[in-house]
Amino acid sequence: MSLLEDEIREQPATLARLLDEGRADAERIAADLRRAAPMFLVIAARGSSDNAARYAQYLFGAHNRLVVALASPSLHTLYRAAPSLRGGAVLALSQSGQSPDIVAVVAEARRQGVLALALTNDPASPLARAASHVLALRAGEERAVAASKSYTAELTALAMLSAELADDEARRRELGELPAAVAAALEANPAPDAAVAAGAERLVVLGRGFSVSTAHEIALKVKETGYLLAEASSWADFEHGPMALVEPGFPALLVAPSGVTVDDAMALRARLLARGAHVIALSDRDELRPSLRMPRVPEWLSPAVAIVPGQLWAVALARARGLDPDAPRGLSKVTRTL
Image 1 (cartoon, rainbow, N blue to C red):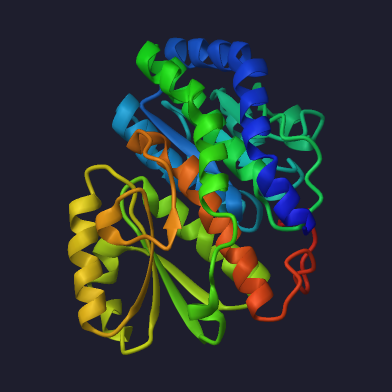
Image 2 (image 1 turned 30 degrees about the vertical axis):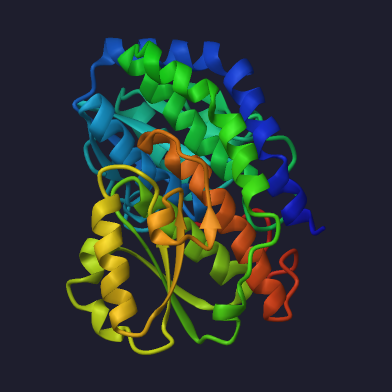
């Protein structure tokens, strides 16, 4: 197996370790957040971490009733025009904790006297040193260029913070089942078939609600490892124009776990098939005839489970296109942007 596949398969153990060892940190951070009572949350992130931030928008919005906005780090570095953060809190997501522009957002929050939190896999990183509170991801060394276990650790850490902030015992129990669900997703997809997209020039990956983050992360993995132009979208936005792209043979990966959006997903699948698309469904619902399967989990936790078949499919696609998923051209493990 490739390094990337090895790390994909480490995810159940990674999440179990984070849930066990990180709970006390999550409790302390959530307690300080409750005391600060922010009116909104600004998240600074890049790359895969930006996709985790998309999850945070739905997570903290649905369960903690917080407005969540994505930061514009270039305002802090290139334009020297940092916005006022008063009344809010800042949360930075970075697996390496090395990118100067993300560090700059956190440093500005501290300068303005705003609570500045960091989720990172390196608790000795510049980001961790700049933050007022750090929740270490505890994912261990990640050697593959494409992120896998550090991404699901970010999702899990966000879920832990949300559950602790709400002091929700039911959601804590649901979190405890997450490692087993990820293990089941691995077992359900031993050898994904990506042949339908191997010769394609483009691909669309669609989700809605909590699954938008998964759609974006799968598309990123496909671009990184398979060099296929993959566009991610909420299918609500896709129907506002981009649907015109769909023609016979067009590949569409539909992320549709059980939840409030699944009935719409079934209707969308029918519309895509009527236009001749090749639909690759990622779901726990037999009605969608999924090519990629996942166990049924609470919708709020589905991104940490659904991404696993997506990661495996991206590896299979890279191989089907004659590429090495461990050696994406022009990329390095740590990216530093100003």
